[in-house]
Length: 140
Picture 1 (cartoon, rainbow, N blue to C red):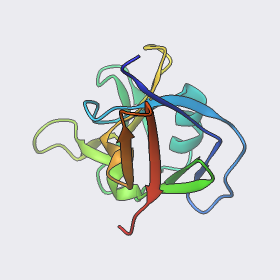
Picture 2 (cartoon, rainbow, N blue to C red):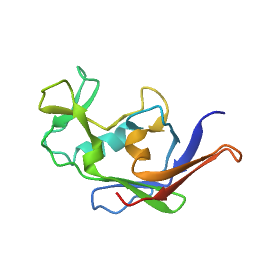
Picture 3 (cartoon, helix red, strand yellow):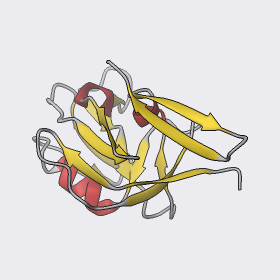
């Protein structure tokens, strides 16, 4: 208890159709990034020119000038779309032209976390009385 767990019934990258691959995870306001399974990361960053996994930075990196595709996920029949600009998280250090991605692998921690990258792309309701979380589209 204490976690806001839900299941996304599928995801899509850019303009591609949403697939039917479920992802169970938690909504967490205390986590900045969107932490998802390695295969989802691989599929996403395959669409980003020059993206690579960097062990020295502990995640996927790419040129800060790269154009990133959106990432969509489905919750309760509603498709939430995170703009690519939200996924270009930040330079790896001040003045760098290499940026860290806002989507990163979750396999090492054993739980998928929908952090601020996802939360700010939607209206999210944390219903403590019924111990459930709800997602709705919002205009970005």
